[in-house]
Each structure stands twice: as structure tokens, then as C-alpha cells.
Image 1 (cartoon, rainbow, N blue to C red):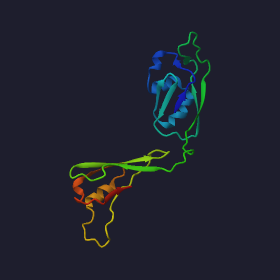
Image 2 (image 1 turned 90 degrees about the vertical axis):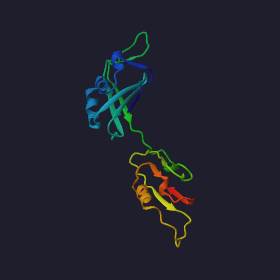
Image 3 (image 1 turned 60 degrees about the horizontal axis):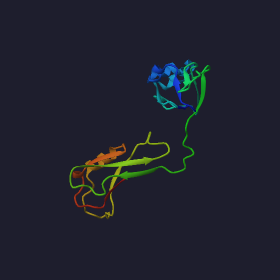
Image 4 (image 1 turned 45 degrees about the vertical axis):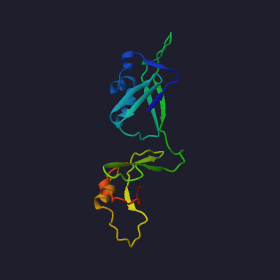
Length: 191
């Protein structure tokens, strides 16, 4: 959760402004807000600047709209000759960011060497671009040999290579060049 202030603010006690974590959350959030946020487990409040307060939740936010209240008497305008302290709780309506406005289709780009090296390890990385990010995305890798006639008598793809590739679900695939047949330039990797 990100709270943006229209003007630079300071916490009434400058010592608290330097605090980080749940004790800062306890100091600035009302008891009602702390109770509502308790279902997200551990809270961590951080001042990223004089105009931005970030509240980290351990679990993703469920609600699309969330009302948050900051305690009264805690905040004052920063660098002001006559600094006014908030005499009422500050109520904030937070809206969950959605990605419904994003129109492009998710894309995957694989980076790595264009040729299998003669020896040693090499890696392929899948760079996934989606409005929803890579959370919950399992990568499925396969290896095939292109342009190989079905009647070919060439050796099949190494079983160990097939097993390593098929059991990898992360976006990074690390392979040993020894698993590939030397001199074959039509082997491709794809998602």
C-alpha cells in the first residue's frame, strides 16, 4: 500500500519518523486500521520520502477498495514556521491497482547463446512480460530437433537433457554442453 501526501510531512516525533517496521505501523495507524490489516499478517511501514509512506503486507490485498486511517496528532507539515499537527485522524481510501486496462498479450523472450558452446555450462532465461507479472507463472521448457526427417537414423535427444528440461519450471534453464550432440546446428530451445 502506498500513501502519497500532497505536501512533505514529518511525524510529530522525529525519532518515530526514522522508525521502520511494525512499531512505526503501530504508532501511525489507528487501532481500527491495524485490526483490518491484521489478516495480512506481518505489516511493515517505511517512509520512502517525506511525501510517501509505504505499507508492506505479507499477503496480497484482497479488497479492491480499502479504507485506512492514520492517527490524529501524529503528522505535521515539514519545514513550516508554524507547523500544524493533524487534529483529526486522516482517512484514506485506497484502491487496488488493476491491470484490466492493459491491452497487450503476454510475451515471452528467451535469451541465451545462439549456439551451444563446445564445453561448460550455459543458461537460457525466459523473460516474461505480462500486466500481471510472473507471480504464479510456471515455465515449461522443451527441447526439439528441427528439420529432422521422421525416417532419420540419427540418435534421439539425450534422455538426461530431456529430463532436465522437462522438470524445470523456473524462468532460468542451466544446461551442460556435454548433453548436446556436437556439430548439430538445428537444435532449438523454445517455451
